Amino acid sequence: MNSRTEAFLAALLALAVLAAASTTPWLVFVLTLALAKGIAVLGILLLLRAGQVSFGHALFVAFSAYTVAFLAPKLGDATLLLPIGALFAGVLGLLVGLFVVRYREIFFGMLNLALSMVFYSLLEKLYTITKGTDGIRVPAATFLGRTLDRHGYEWALLLTALALAILCAVFARFYLASPMGQALSGIKTREARLEFMGVSARRVLLSAYVISAVMAGMSGALIAMTSRHVTPHLGYWTASGELVFIAILGGAGGVIGPFLGAIVFELVRVYAAASFADAWQLILGVVLLLVILFARGGLWGMVLKLCGRRA
Image (cartoon, rainbow, N blue to C red; front, side, top):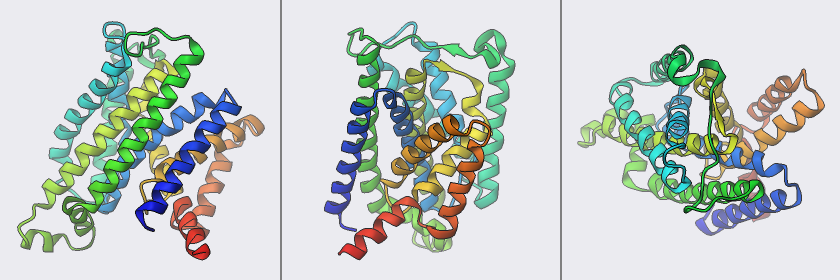
């Protein structure tokens, strides 16, 4: 697919999000969370290009969310909280990445999971600091010093999430097309060849890992300011599983796939929980099973096939 067609589809998806939020006000909250998770899944997409899957990426989402929760009473402005949350997550990603990029495949995934669960346990046990499973309430942030009402606040967060999603998607598109991004595919196919060419596979994977941590940090900051309440569950293994679920659902063939998968995931979960409160997990499982069996490229793969047939 050429860049013009991909840009057109991205614009179409953005307009659909805005139209849905305008016609159905309660979807503003749901779509904001979906876009936030899509940004985190976009970071996982970078690792998937290298053939690596992180089962503990919720670590960076939770770390950023708690950073925002602790700093919100003092700073209070979204224009400060968002970059600080992403920066802190990026620093943590650098520290963790220096260790985990030495490993590959299942060892890479399980080490990420183990570190995520260690952080989850700390959040749960350090009650005097984190309030344990009760979580921490996040006060409403201001935007450029302006205090907004509830309606304006929700729309400001949605537009911020949409703008960040577009910027991250454009960045990921150029990054994957760059020599560094092409080297990620080399790690998946023939890592030894990269080393023979003088390219350090660890450095290539570390750069992608740090970028993915920064994107997860953006996601965590948006989730904290949107839900206005953070709990240790943000770092639990099921939260990391959701991100991997969305990556499979949306498809790793393009940068739009993570957002398409996140939106469908959140909408299916909301409507399934409303209609079948005791069986919504089963519905999500069936949806994922159908995607694996009949659309291995995910929802984005289905879009590519549809566009190919029309062409």
